[in-house]
Image (cartoon, rainbow, N blue to C red; front, side, top):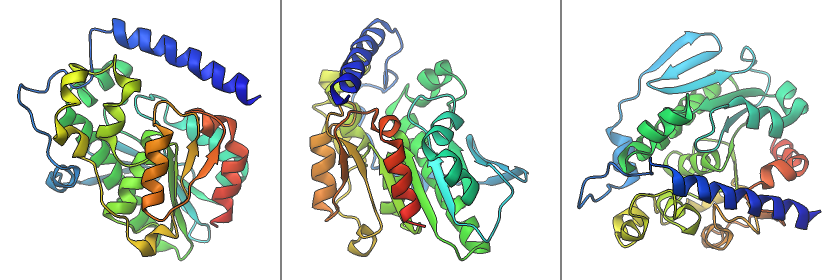
Length: 287
C-alpha cells in the first residue's frame, strides 16, 4: 500500500515538473535584478491589518478570507485550518482531512489565502515576486492571530492551529511569531519557505532558480532560530518520510533542533490525505 501511494505521488510530481517547465509564468519572475528579500517578520510588521466583518461567519482581512463554518459556540473548542499553496478550493482539504466528528464538535475556522481565487491570480499576484509571496503568508498568519484572539475573547476552551503544506507553514510561523494558540498541528511543513521553494522540487517553477539559490537572503528570509521551549510542548508536527515537496530530512532536522519530535508517516506530501484518520486522532487528543 505504501509503495502504491508513493509511486502515485512520484508520477504526479513528474507531470507537475513538466507543467512547471512549460509554463511561461514562473515564481518570482518579477523580482528586480539584485533583489535582496527582507526578513519575513519585517514584512509582516509592515502590514496594517483591518478586519472587516462581512457576515456572522465570513470575515475578510484585506484579501485574506476567514470562514467560520457554523455560528460560534463558546462551549466548544476551536480549530483553524489552512489549505496548501496554490489550492483554489479552500474548503476541500479542511472537510476531507478534519472529518465530521471534528467539524461537529469544534468551531471550525477555514482560512483562504489572499490571491487564491484562481490559478491565474495565484501565479500573477501571489508568487510573481518573492515579496508578494511573503505578503500572502503574512496575511494568513495575521488572520490566524485574529481568529485566536476572537476565540479567546469568547471562550475558555482550547484552540488548535493547523493546516497542510502552506497551511502547516502558516501554523508554524504563527507559533513562532505569536504563540497564542493552545496547540499547533502543522502538517507536512516547517517554517523556512525560502528553503522549500528554492529546493529541488521547485527547480522548474522558479525564475532563475539556480541563481536565486546562491542568494542567501532568499534562503534565510523565513529562517527562525528557536521556538520558545515552553511552546514546543504544544506543537505536534506531522511529516511524510518520502515527502519531496517539503523535504523530509530538512523538516525533521528543524523540528528536532526545537526539541520537538514529529509524527512521521511512511508516505510523501500526500500524507495528509492517506493518514487523515490518524491525524484526526491527533487533533482530537489535543481537545
